[in-house]
Image (cartoon, rainbow, N blue to C red):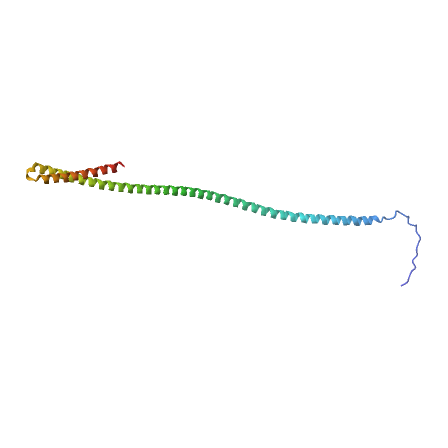
Length: 188
């Protein structure tokens, strides 16, 4: 292998041109960093938005569930209030009926007492009337017998007739007293 010398040929000198800017490469880097940061922030915001949407949907579903539950509980409460009012009305009706029955029972008791008093009074009056009737019966019988004795007065001792007349008069006076007592009792 042989070595050949390399010849350098002078050529035209390069023309000096504008010097390369140092800021241009740096600006591209900054621009790239800003672009990457913007994409990262955009991606973060997109992920966050998707999560918020998912969370908002979950909360909305929960809120709807709670609203449905509240609606159901309100219906149950309305039903319970209706039943409670019906029970109160029934209680009021039952209380009123019990009061009426108690009053009726008291009146019946009063009527029974009054009936018993009337019965006792009637028994007492009947007893007094029986006494009067018996006494009047004895008086009438005694007078009839006295009249019979007087028709045949010559067969009896005058003292015996007078004594019998006093006895009959006493019987009739007792009958009259019993009758007066009965009349006073009936006036009460």
